[in-house]
Image (cartoon, rainbow, N blue to C red; front, top):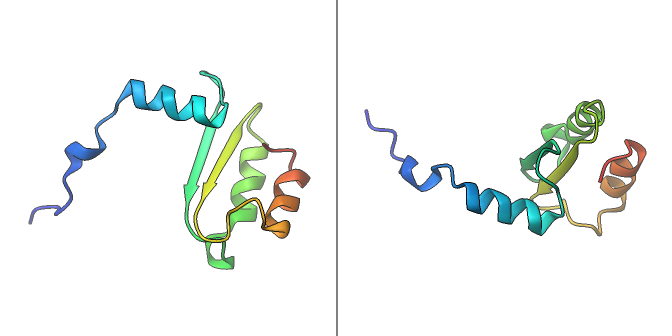
Length: 84
């Protein structure tokens, strides 16, 4: 049974990776963890942030409904863990 997803679309592209990190202001070699999901209890974002906070110098990128800078609860959680 074929996967149904054109995996070639997701091939590694070093240039795009560097450009994405530059847009986020994350230098090469700095651990970057990303999550694409809505901000909801079921996604357990607090546990993700706690884990990332244990990674020395790590940065986190959250994308999805409710993950914007206007979310005071999420912003406080990120700050509490000392993440950027």
